[in-house]
Amino acid sequence: MQELDISIPSTDFASQLLLLFFYNKMQSQRFLFVAILACFLVTIKSTPLSDISYSDESTSVNEKTQKRPDDDSEFDGFPFREDDDSLQDSSREMSVQDHNWDVLIFTQQWPVTTCYHWREENPDQECSLPQKKEFWTIHGIWPTKLHQMGPNFCNNSANFDPSKLNPIEDRLETFWPDLKGMDSTEWLWKHEWQKHGTCAMLVEELDNELKYFEQGLTWREEYIMSRILDASDIHPDSNNTVAAINNAIVKALGKNPSIHCLYDGKHGISYLSEIRICFSKSLELIDCDGIKQGDAVPVGVPGGTIITNCHIGSLVHYPSLVPPLQRKSHWKLPLVNVYKLLQFLMWFTL
Image (spheres, helix red, strand yellow):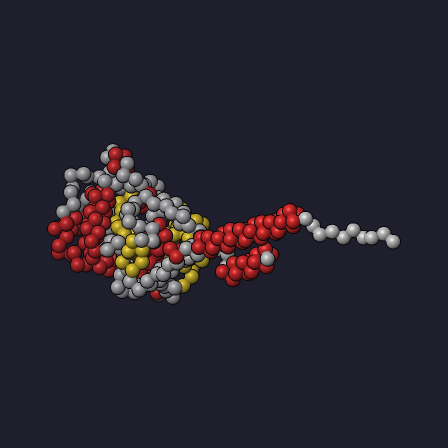
């Protein structure tokens, strides 16, 4: 009978097996450590604290630091510019040649949309909203040639003197404020006077600072845009067609206005921004037909024409509050998924 040769592995071979076992174990633990570290880093990256923002919807929101509301600006999500200010200061040289103009464009702005515009450019600056609700403010009085832009900066010798506005300063601060705040209001008045007021001086009724700004206050008190819209049941926090807004103004004034929106491309929403009405050199209310203001164009609709840069086929939002800041969108790995991944890795490497 043949014996079976049953032998015990040599000590060297057994040692090699043991070393191989511990080596594999260490490699698995190293892999587990690296995996845990990677998951930790992903978790931190995907939930940055700086991206969590809250907004104060009472009396102030944020606005841009370096750029002014009257600067040439265009920001992500809002392809439309503030049309009057799409002209750069180089227009000073062009306007020297011909300072004549045909109409005065009186512009009222909806502060909520203006503040939203600035905040979307830079969420680090305040923008002070009027204390009163449904309160439109003056943006400016702009002498304009028909079918052209400008003129601007017509008289460099007509320096701005804030002391001349002392008799009406309180009213200006209420109806013609710089939404950036009281500290910069004088800057806005100086800008409006130098760029537009010096051109309006061709008319005797507007040939000095006091007359120019006082006329703006007169028109603001006579053409209260919130009441005009309210009469046609158009209120803040509502959505309306451009045609409905236009019809409300024509119904009240009997003249064609120019209606301007800012379009939030990130959320697909058009916001009512400005309403402009026009006056002749004799300061009589007239149609705004023929004015050229940036991207606003006459659009044919049933029953007439609307001058606007708004999306004619979309609803326009008339906001009552500045929309809250949205948390920035990043690729996120939920914590619960990280936990499940770690559990799987630990089981797999044991």
